[in-house]
Image (cartoon, rainbow, N blue to C red; front, side, top):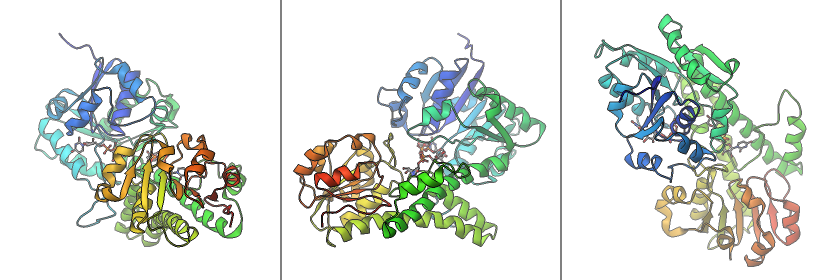
Length: 461
Ligand code: UDX
Ligand code: UDX
């Protein structure tokens, strides 16, 4: 039976970005056939089951609405490259761990392999869409590989369409984006390809929110957006350290400065540090690019954003150590939350990993609780399995512990019965709030010694 789809769209890479983005396109556009492929069979099996491989509020319902109708998950990369005319690529681009640029540059190995696969399999013209975050000028390299003459019958047009979704709010972000950015070559064929992608998004995004630019601006915008967001957090976290020395209160300060419309009130929350797969990787990538062009001062400027972030995590652990009488050995310390932020099970670059490792180095007994991230935590800390316990129930996790450290701003931690928790803990009982989410005065009145972030501690000593 001939298929009646208006367009066939492929996405290579069924991760945090590819999965939710394609599910939304399929949900909003029943006239397109959408296929998501991945080399990881387990992941594809999970996308085809009731237990999706990632947790994201609202994702399951959207997947269910379209799966089997116009949304398909498969491991057959080659077949679908042949069949689809638009190919999104959202394979991972981690920080390089070897050779030139190790620890800084983006590792484009998976991207290049994917480009070569496309080149080998394609039998008709394709639009290739960069969804992964890539260093500026990657499209040029891709264009060269793809149009390298090995398959000169086929024409490839490369577009840049960076993803700005944040985990935990991904579905909402894709449904109602602040903007969609599409970068293309300024040639006739580039603009034609751009228009195809604009048409896909215009099924649910207002035309004025679809921005177009040259391809290099688009690639660089993604790195710059993440660098600016992370820079706000490092700026506020640096001031949180000053607040702890001066009896000023970080929430009062951010409230005061955030009402200035030139500054704005978002992304001003002091924390134990930012995590997530993108911020550190993208800043280091930006730093590396600056250095490549000889822009040393500019590179140093942005690198300091990541240095402050590491320092903030370190400061958190040192605060625990010094306030708990300079020894954590044999003390039970319970981490409330392990995910890098609330409403996700993702633990990539989570500050909780840094904190857990440092606590183990101090010979503390670490107990980790989290509603969604326990299995990722176990694999992140597999080398430490004998020294860490994992308990989903927060009351049980806190039982007989000397301290609680709030690592993730899950709203469930705001609503716990802290009197009950206090009574089951060793005394003196400590709570370190790395997210400033609990009522510090109330906890102090219950009997806790409370250490917020960027505010004076409330102690009974
Ligand atoms: C990825 C990039 O890491 C990020 O830079 C970009 O901004 C968006 O895309 P994410 O979706 O979070 O982010 O990555 P991940 O969840 O690791 O998914 C990538 C998927 O690609 C994995 O499932 C992996 O198995 C798959 N993959 C990787 C392939 O299918 N083929 C490859 O050759 C390599
Ligand atoms: C980020 C960008 O927001 C998104 O646009 C991009 O596409 C990918 O990277 P994500 O990593 O999913 O998204 O989460 P985000 O909400 O940006 O949070 C990153 C980290 O910053 C988290 O650890 C979060 O807890 C922390 N954070 C955020 C703060 O510490 N304070 C804040 O005010 C905001």
